[in-house]
Length: 489
Image 1 (cartoon, rainbow, N blue to C red):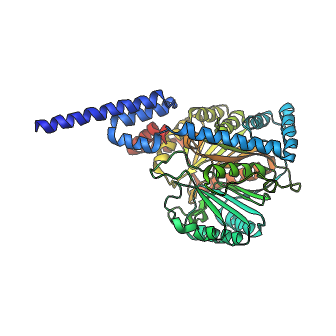
Image 2: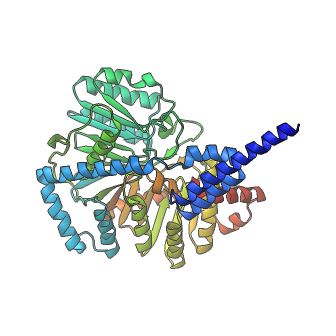
Image 3: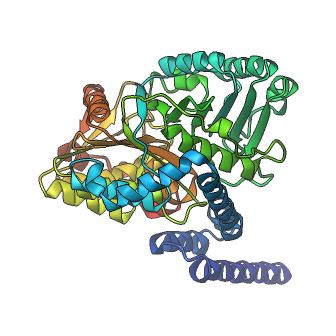
């Protein structure tokens, strides 16, 4: 018995030493946000063995600097190679210099010019020649996409976080296979973790027809960080899609678990497609082992003149120096003058975003936030409720969407500027995932999107201060735990 106790004591000492070493790595070498650091320290010290496993899955950043700094340098090389070897891009460079020098040209409101200037500094140029169509349901979005695929003559480039092997996923692959057999260049990029259950043979017919696919950062060991959450489709350089819809039957609203699916997606025609195309090329060439794309004029065609929706396609993630989408959100919130309308399925903001929303409400602005009432991740829901509770005290009006599941990621300011894309209002989208959003400086499209937001309120239950203060003790406990570890989410 003494020998057994001695062995157990020795193992305990080893576990303690291992935790101390790992905790030291978290504190001294990974340079995390202090809130994230303390959250991980609590897990490592109080749940020694399981905490280590959780850290290896969720928290380890050991290869981030090397892997994604290399991608960032590669992306910059592709970006500048395009700028200086594309004849039309010389005109773009001069146009963007003019924008910086004459910021008032963009829009009348000064804060919008500031936001555009912010994105210009991150390499996202302003485009003026764009037509935008908005979708709030999967049926219309995917029917439009199928028709555009059928009209394709040169290439189809698609990038999705999730691609299910169900009816919708199978239908789209069949359409893509037909186009590949016709000689159209077809490339499909999907996330390795988001599609871990997708059968390996699922794309065999597409490959046999000449199409290419690639899985972004596949791993034998499960890693939930650094996922490619972007959703893009570019067809012939003439039509492009960006927004919240992945590919799967649930996005059509026909999966009982979620019910009707409410999302936001945009169909672009115009010069914003150049930035979508650049984003796809950079992500594809980083991922694909074969069939890498060489920059060519065919991917950046001349286009007709459209309605003129001023747009920037803004990317961010571990492969960008700055948190571009998050910084865009932050600037929009802090420069608002009348109202802020936000829809997000996951609300786990950092301190800056949270304080910006609180100050806006305290300043008398109309601030409204919609989250799902039927969440797909309850832990994140409890964390979201803890943050919303703080905002309620400041006068922010918060709502739960009850007609199915709401997955839209959108922010509208003052009826003048809108952001729609893939980035949630949470720390994971701000720092850990690869995201892309469209920022639009246009009253017409913003008013259309805001009108849809106001209609959504009719399918919501308002979270009042009275309701929040009456929540059960067990709900408060869940909130407290979720809030404590939310920096790790």
